[in-house]
Image (cartoon, rainbow, N blue to C red; front, side):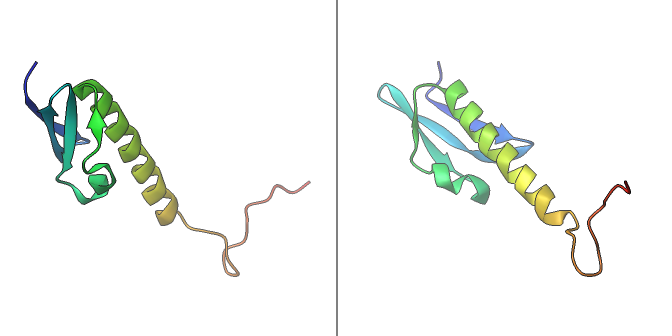
Length: 81
């Protein structure tokens, strides 16, 4: 195995994974992955899965924020019945 890896999530360079003894330390490059700064992982694949899950959560949150919300001028869709 290599001593360092670049992890990309959705074509964004998330950060660097550097071997430190028996584990790998994560160093964030992209702002949305700063919460993982200094996190330790047993191997690069575990790190990538964790970062990918975080990326998916962030994408869903952005999509929810962009979707129109019901308001006084935008009523809920209701079925007539």
